[in-house]
Amino acid sequence: MSEAEIRHAQRWSAAKLRLVLEPGGSAALAALLAGKVDAKPGLLVMLSGGNADPDAYAAVLGSEN
Image 1 (cartoon, rainbow, N blue to C red):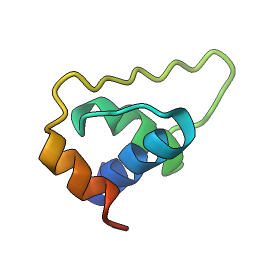
Image 2: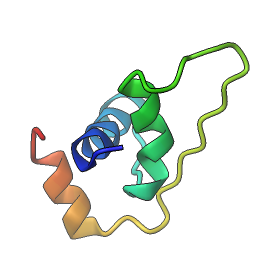
Image 3: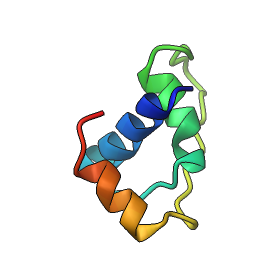
């Protein structure tokens, strides 16, 4: 996953799911959103945000890439 795809997943999860995700915790979602993983019945995507740095997260939300 590229850093841009991971940042996109962080912004998407904030807007659509109202979740704060750390970069590593959004990698699986980034793969799904980028079409690198097929969305099949039974697919589970684990998300986490316990280590999100507030300043870095704010910068991601304020950017478009």
